[in-house]
Length: 498
Image (tube, rainbow, N blue to C red; front, side, top):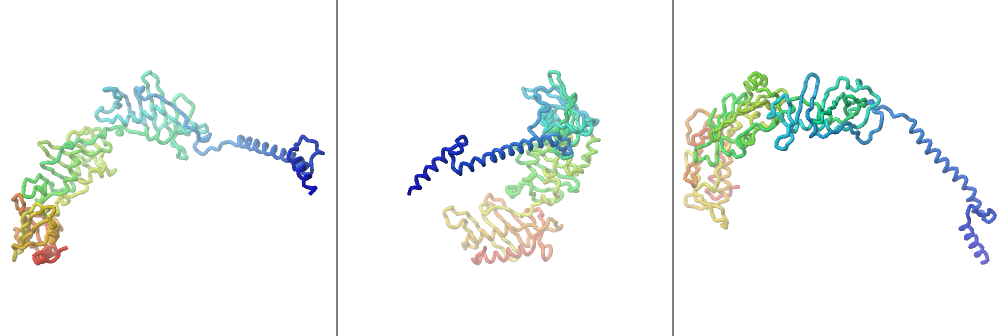
């Protein structure tokens, strides 16, 4: 019990003793603490020496050249030259022997850019402005100090651009080679000693040709208001016989087939919805092949004997397009009033350049909706099946009332049967020079009083030639028509048709 207060006093003494106290006043623990202090101080001192030495070593180690002439680590971009593009009067670009002069004009409070070598109407102001912008806002990734101008390709620059400002000041930008590590391009200003490494985008902006400034507006069409045309002719290497498509004036089927192919064979036309946009909105342009549209230039690009020529007439106006395939896979194209030879991607005119006449031949024989017919007749040489059709009110369980020989048939059965009839299509577009004979026939009476007659003439054991209101459509399979004959028997006998 007597030891407890003594231990408390020891604890108290330890808690409040310091290194400045009398050594005799400390217990054994304090003595140990004192002995450790010099070691701690020595460790701290050693750490400081180590850090200082490391810094010194880092400073003494030279920056290695990465092969691009880089003598410093990457940092924030360096401003090489900055000017307001609105203050630029002219820009002269030299690429080898090619010289391009650019200038600006303010028209209706809008700053437009042009080139002196080409008519204003044939140039694209935005493309020229992009070059000017690149020359008036130049920044570098870093400065190059371990390469000479000759080593950087700056004594014979790929592009030499002189910018003249309206205040009279001018400066010249020299663009050199690409760095060995592909991190950028070398650049130097005339009159300056510094060489810079600039981003690849600077090279992209300045490596231009005169044709890069060509106007890329679409080749003019009729306009978005075009809905119906009168005639369309297509000729060329894929069309050794000129294809001619005309507006269908036959009221009996014009509601379903707006256009007819009238040459080289008479057919119903399809695919017109893919053609119209090219003549409504015009043809999208990717660039230009030439500003020269002389006869010699047209011949050079194959437009004197084009791969494809299309001519459309509508409301008394005619527009012609000519297409010639080039080695780069694009097409040289001119319109009626073209003042340059346009470059057009094949994908923009695929409806023309990748098709043949049969691509415009309709495979379907008729597309009349049941709602629009009052009578449907299926005929063979031996028998005729006539169905009277009327549409019911919406609240009726059955959509149509279908009567055969005074007997009401199930509406859904007739609908499925009619769907099978309408799905019959030509398997090829070849036709025989024969007189149509109704070996089998579909006869439709429209509610407007017009009749549609599809006649099938047997050609051989496997094929029938189909004729729609006097138009030879091609051949259908005998098996498809045999199936219709079986289905009509099921229909009149009340059997389910699915």
